[in-house]
Image 1: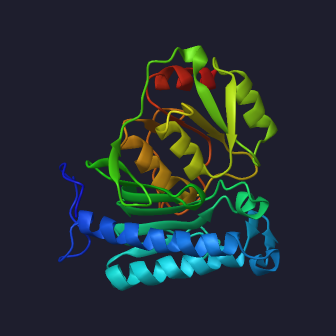
Image 2: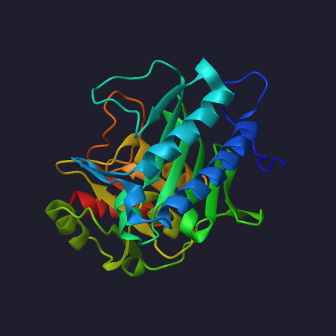
Length: 289
């Protein structure tokens, strides 16, 4: 059953499938990927084979889910799309030539996965000319799944298949906003930036997908990222960004511009602000002070 019915601004990369059809198949893939991650999460520590890299740890679970998702999506789309995933990316500034590019993080929040906080997620996005048009974010440990399509809104899909459209809420005073902050990545610059915001209540969560889900669920209102020696990557942001925007929120750079993906450098440098939207400009102004 196709649940997305609003106008979609771009065509599909496949002649025999609409974007809504592709999203339905992507939802199914993400559900089976969640089962795989859960099996590793509940397995013995020896199964994880943790490898510490400069950008963070990688486990056999990351690689298994990456292969599962790539096999399924490539079987559907073939050479009509490019593929950019955290586990297959080779360091270097290069841009995939295709208009349509899948951007995938098979396990966002690997440290939280290892530490058993439950705050890890699967990110899958399809971009068209550098902007996301289709997204799925699955949070296995809470059996939550969010699906979004450009012009078609964001939907929550429960484990038993119930589908509910989601819109972010507002109505809070600026000083009462809750800032969702990282558990593991808190540079000195980010700490200083957060301290100058007009709202000081914080909720600490791992994965970026889980952070943005907290905004959708009205447990938080604002997320701020500030790069230092490293920055969030395309695969960290593409799916959560569309998920928030299609639910009525905002996700921009400090100057108010939209993010772009598959630009050569996968790092999203600078200050990025995601919010429920109501006080977005005021937050941008505060970050410029």
